[in-house]
Image (cartoon, rainbow, N blue to C red; front, side, top):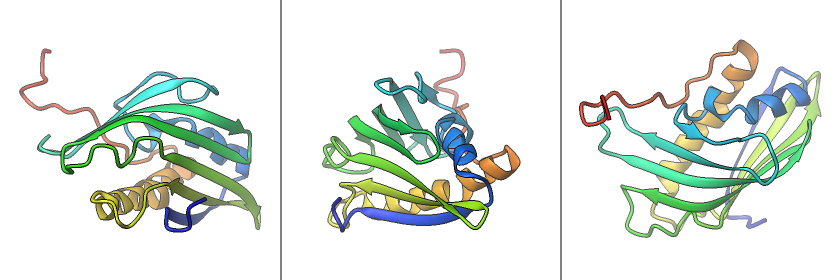
Length: 161
C-alpha cells in the first residue's frame, strides 16, 4: 500500500462480522443514491454524492474486489467524476479497503483509500468526507441502525424526472 494514501482507524463496539455486514450495506452509511449490488465479489455499483444545493456532485462506478467475512472488504474505483476538481482521473483505479480486527469485544476498522494521496486536488475534501462517513456515519449505522448517508436530491431539476 502507498504510505501516503489516506488512512483512518476507528473502533466500533460490535463484532467484526457485524461491522463487515454493515460496510456492505453502503446505502445505510455512505449514500442512499447507490445502484447495483454492493455485497458480491465482482459486482459493480454506481455511487452518487452531492451537496444540499446540488452544486457539487460526485459520481463513481465501483467494483467489489474482495469480501472476506469479518476480515476485509476491498473495492476498486473504475470510473469517477467530481464537479469540484479539474483532474477527473484522481480516483480512477484507486482501491478502497476496510480491514477488520477484533479488539476488546469490538472491532478495529482500518480504512484506507489506496491511491488517494495528499498531492491530489480532491485530497482535503475527500479526507474530510471519508472522516465523516468512516468515523461517524458507519459506526452509528453499525451500533444504532441509523447512519447519516447522503439522501436523494429533491432539487426542482430532478423532481418528476
